[in-house]
Length: 124
Image 1 (tube, rainbow, N blue to C red):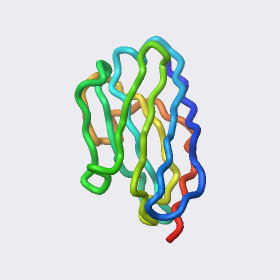
Image 2 (image 1 turned 90 degrees about the vertical axis):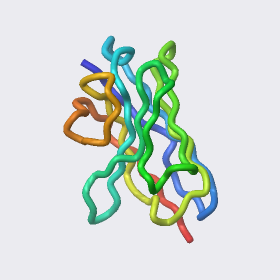
Image 3 (image 1 turned 180 degrees about the vertical axis):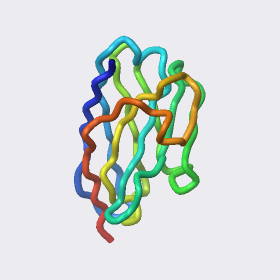
Image 4 (image 1 turned 90 degrees about the horizontal axis):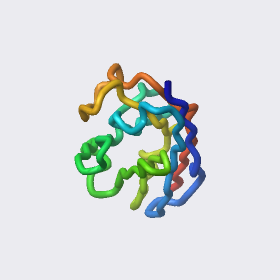
């Protein structure tokens, strides 16, 4: 079992940056791909980025490619999302998630552990 806790959300103006962190516990962390998802007001939860457990392979949603960077530290059981050039459309609750395998994917159904989420608000 994996427990996940996000931190680092907040409010920022358009063009600014935020760094989200996710602290994980549970032995499956080292063998699992990890991902970030988000849910904007009135919308479904959507994929943002994912990273394989060795930290080499990554996958990004087109909407964040080139602006967001996902990373992980397996020794510290942490996951991070560096968000630059933020836009009002990035406003959402961001969730950290652990996959059921090491395969990268954007399908929400393949992630079986979730954090409680952290709010990111970007003003224009």
